[in-house]
Length: 160
Image (cartoon, rainbow, N blue to C red; front, side):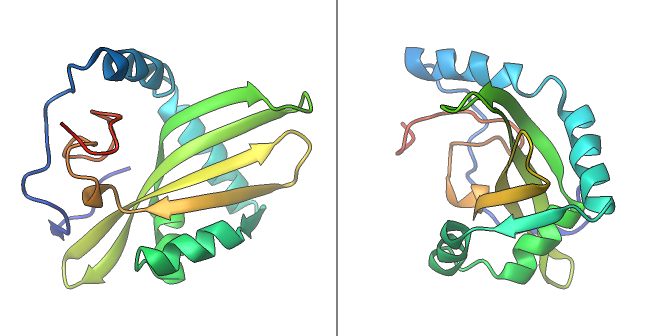
């Protein structure tokens, strides 16, 4: 996905340095495994959306939109124009496969001004819908993401 042209809302001091903490380095290696097939996963989700798969908007998502001052229109826009930056497939406690994605999209907030948004999506084996679990603005997490908001740099709650 091409980034929208224009200014981005975010912190100018966004960290570009990978955290050197041992725990963060291990988690970064695991993170990178989930980024290998991002393009294929983007196509997979977009195809489902184009074929009008149902999208389940959770109560948790609604609560986070309110607390993070993200409108449902912004969330929808980011889903439609976004792309996968991370994917993981795993077995849940019931033995069903679950696909989980972190999706980066942009919402227009003004003339040539866009807000980056991360949506966490999932789909369980046998379900005919994609669930949007939560949404957040990665630029509000100064130091946790690179300047493109596609690579996690640190896993500390409060960056070092």
